[in-house]
Image 1 (spheres, rainbow, N blue to C red):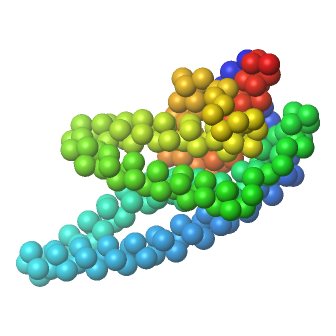
Image 2: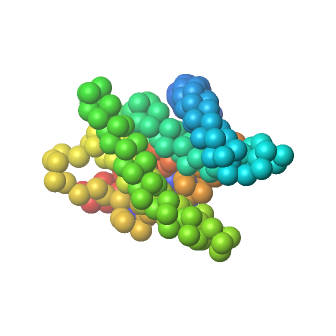
Length: 232
């Protein structure tokens, strides 16, 4: 059975593969474009709402400064949450290319499996993004309550997204290869959580967050195929 560190090492070693670089370039371009458009729309709505509330509640001499600070703070938190959701939504569309590249190099016997239909890929992407959005919205009140602890908020979001990401990364690979809908995935729950936790942590680090989804999908491919071979 391949451990997560081994799967990650294999994935890092393949980052220079032209097929992986193409996926990285496409997914990065689309992610940043969507993120920028959503960010501009969110910033405009947020700035207008905060400005109206602050101006109505505070003296005019410093209401503009307070509104600006609030908009920046809330916008930064929203951006932090939004990037991972957008990145994973986009990656769903390119996941097959990453999986195929890893399979072609390491598991050629599995590379001939047919891709999922586009409609199913779209449905999977939509479910993934909606699930991530709903979970993050649900835990937001608890995260806000824990703000005073300094680390509580980050820990809550990390735990939730570790579970979500582990499942999504596994399914990107497993749904292409399972022989029946009720078949159990070959990645153990602790390993799946560790994979999700690692990617969730990388998504918070500038520049590394651009590589995190690709490394996660490639690592999941190794874990699924090595797990399948152990179960044969």
